[in-house]
Amino acid sequence: MTSHTCEEKRVHVLSTGQLVFTRQALPGDLDLVNVMHQRCTDASRYKRYQGVRRALTSVEWARLTNPRYGVTWVTTPSNGSDGVIAVSHLMRTDRDGVHELGLLVEDAWQNRGLGMSLACHAVHLARRLDCHSVAVMTDAANTPMLAITRRLGAFVPPSSSGVVDLVIPVAGAGRCPQG
Image (cartoon, rainbow, N blue to C red; front, side):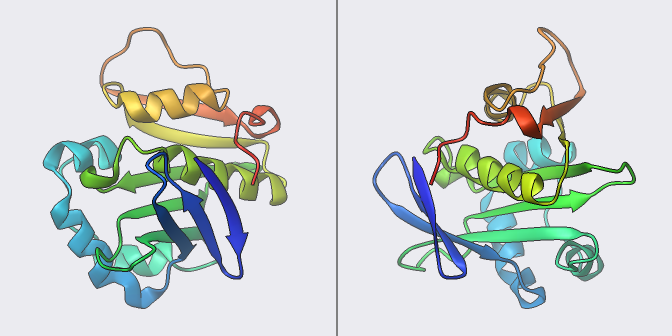
């Protein structure tokens, strides 16, 4: 998996060699994001939200796309045929120097390195924003997110159940591929 910036889009080369693009989300992307949510399994949505969410509301999306609260990205295949295939967020928290990361990758696009690339993209932005930590809240059974956060330097408890709060130290996140 490699990625680099191309104008306003970030280009990711998946482990399969396929190209996908990530760009900052717009308020008008809500319908595409909700269509992607419908294509995701209940299990994937549960891992992301710790509940089975079928869609985001217009109020939630307005907050997620408002720069006052952070940044949200949407990812699309290079041919654009599948619409949005992933949504990621780096949102401010009430703690100075801490932003929260959220990722949802459509099931058909999982296990190709996209989640790791999106997490690295967010951590690099957090570094530019002078954050010291990126918080992640996930289900203890979300092994892909646990692997991503572990690779980025978070301490992951050996055995837990329910929701796990993790912290990625931004200074130690040099485990991201450069690009």
